[in-house]
Image 1 (spheres, rainbow, N blue to C red):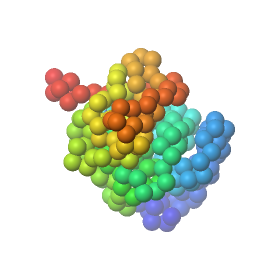
Image 2 (cartoon, protein in one colour):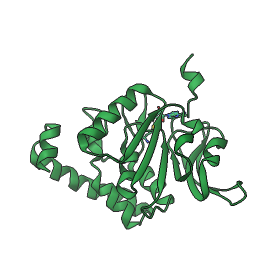
Image 3 (cartoon, rainbow, N blue to C red):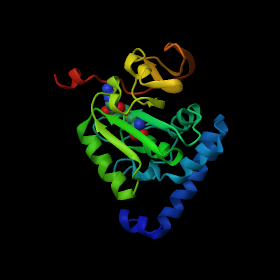
Image 4 (cartoon, rainbow, N blue to C red):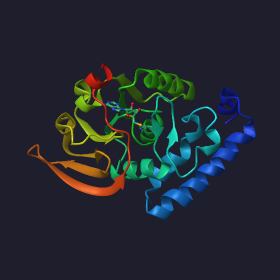
Length: 228
Ligand code: SAH
């Protein structure tokens, strides 16, 4: 904890204060809305969310809201991260892909729960920042890649679970393909109105689709759109 304080320029008491804020956030925003998985709650308690938000927003890191992370992108509301993570029902041995690294926060929560996390981000500036942040924090089990996550990460497939944190208007076929049979994917789907969908891959390669809750994510971009 002292190293952490030294590393961020915070006084040692600050890390304790943030831990108290995290505990309060878990109780009031997450457990109260029905996420009860003790493994997920413990992972969220372990990850210092204030280190993933924009400089100057640390004081709001535990608020019940999404926050800016630069490049016009946002870190999701804490409850949504908890909900999506819980939907994957991770046991520890899974290989997980995240599409939309953003600040790296969701990836860091996943990295508390499983050994292997792969995260792909289309914005080069964000991915460079995340690589530095994770290194500084000593988180070593997240592989990052700069690219269009609509295509997935073919070389590392199949994945046991996939979490998508930018919204396409349909389920990307390559992501279903790269999901192991029996594997789960949680993904926001839609344009202005989006729903969080839980996809389970069947033996025959098709998938079961279950709509969960209404959500609002930034749209999933495609590589060609960024090159315009
Ligand atoms: N999971 C992030 C929040 C994601 S915000 C966190 O915990 O902070 C959505 C992110 O998806 C943005 O950073 C955006 O640049 C990225 N994104 C949008 N389209 C993408 C695509 N096709 N492939 C990969 N990343 C994409």
